[in-house]
Image 1 (cartoon, helix red, strand yellow):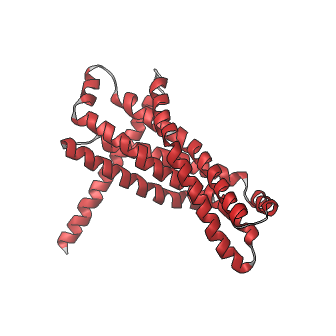
Image 2 (cartoon, rainbow, N blue to C red):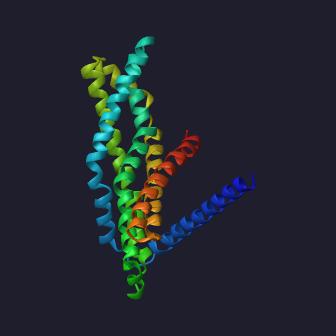
Image 3 (tube, helix red, strand yellow):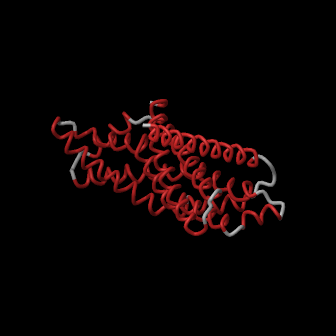
Length: 256
């Protein structure tokens, strides 16, 4: 019994320590973010990496998610003669939940892991220590551009995912399942509000902060050589993904 309590206690202490380090990194990044120079070139480079290079996976994910939603919703609503609600169901699900969440998870797997691996490699090869010797703050140079890119580009990617998801649902609902296109679109416009879209974008910005912050944290404090880089990358993806899903519940409870 004592060993179980000790194990739980050590895990709790380790969690509190890591959470404190993450918050310290976030505060340091926020402090350096407002200090000149702006390093716009580095920010735009990370925006391209996080946003533009993630377009293909986001479009594919969004389109087929919307298509599957329409297919499943149709079979459910047909039992009650409510096929006209398929479009609004797809649009609400994409804008409120699936668009922000799936986009963030895809970007976490593609870009968040790369952040952890890149910074981890720089840490174990002492490139980050070299920045200190050159009077360059590594948080300003390495962490801030990635966090800014994550916060700015996730809402943009979410808008694209929402659009292609709704389009995929329309193609399946109207083209394959032969739902009346006028009713399909009219119900969607009637039920979906701008607030739903806005809240989804706010959630995606929060998810962008989470995935970039966790990726940078795990990479920035990597130890153990090449093996440590691999472990840091894996943990960054797992922790960021779980944190996104947990925070999604609390954000949804607060917004809706």
